Length: 382
Image 1 (cartoon, rainbow, N blue to C red):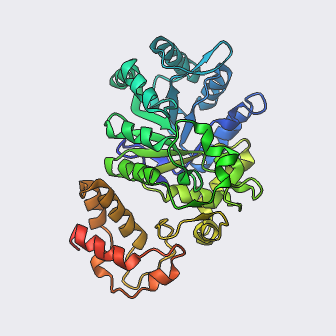
Image 2 (tube, rainbow, N blue to C red; image 1 turned 135 degrees about the horizontal axis):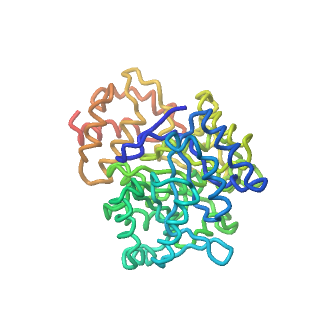
């Protein structure tokens, strides 16, 4: 298992994480089985958005004896009321729900306290006005949560929260189909059938900008909906008109700026093993570029997907990394210190490009790589 830094939190998380979708299977008996497999395979990070007390109790039991080996991303504002899940901005309900959560999980702290499900600007303002963010800060000051996060499906709202400086971790829906969708305050739009009757061209700029802002500000992204609810794995259901493999979907997410871990919502140990298999998959098995280039409904023409099909460079330039740092600098309107330092330690830079064009012949998306290398020299100075 490989591990990545979760933004600036100081946490080192497994790049394959667990969602909690399968924990309730078989009357919650699956919870311990999934945690047993996760521990054996080196998974150390999981998300718990569900508020069902029975499920949280099952997780608490499964965590016994290994709490310090596992990092918990659990959700503030996700509560259980009248026998069902409720997203609330009522501060009293939020406080009661958090106390119950700690008790059921048998822990005295949460690694990432995730402010739950904010997809509208009005909702973000309510989080500020109703004291939810202040409460999260209070919990952090007391050590009850170590870091403050936010979950969202809307890139504009998520970016507003990130740029406020209050959010350390962002849980966001990332996959190659959702990344084509314009921002919406209705999450159902992301998987509505009629939305995909259109032919889409290229990544939505608000999503690209969000990833870049997170990278430049040191906000780590934890990925939900990597497989679009499983639709991307089924040729008949895939909005792209073709199926991808789990390894291709995971690799796409892990090559986005700021992404630290992909939270796989496995319903069985077999499904979780399929996701873990990414760690030993070959470059060819992970490669999503060839599949993307042949999608009948979608084109990423001219857009760098950080897929590294351009390699190898005779001058040992990591074209994908140079392009990623170039895009981060351009989107910031300046060169953030972190971007400058990451660019500096690359083995080779834009100035090493001999303009041979070999990379452009290999690029499935027709990216003007030689032009980008020249632009990198203009911006970084070498």
